[in-house]
Length: 238
Picture: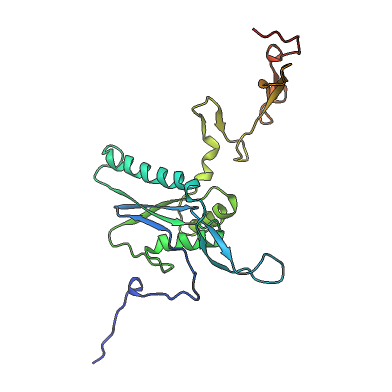
């Protein structure tokens, strides 16, 4: 009689090839649906100096001024909490999260994606170890180097890419500035024309006198408010 031992990959442990293989900065909240996040919390420490002869190996993640990036982490937590408290958004469904520290590095970001997909700290590509949850999407980092790498990896698993739909985004921020994307899905930038006016007492004032929009039609790219320009006149103190 033959006896076969069936062991799930989720029960195995993959040993790291060296100390400092991966970051310990991760946050997990149980839910029916899991939203993954790759957020910068720390910076990498390199074993060798940057040059063209040696392979630069990451030794570990080093925490520096975490309060600078705490706002991204808190925004993630608050958004998940607001969604779970509103029964009209996801009725009878709880939204969880799995956040990994990107360590400001594309390699760590890719490891984080695989870790979120696996449901374990140890990477188990092709397997999911969430007992009752399902990963439904990811929020990547702001810098393009890591975000492009994450987008290519998640594309293999057929996760939809938000950047395909950014072309249709058009809204105003709290300051009234328009935020939209051009035909190449780039943020439509504009340049404010400012006048630095100096008073006789050597104090200065910045005056907004115009704007240049490269994405606008050619006859509307440049706007100058002539009435806003101040000319130097004798200074009389009240």
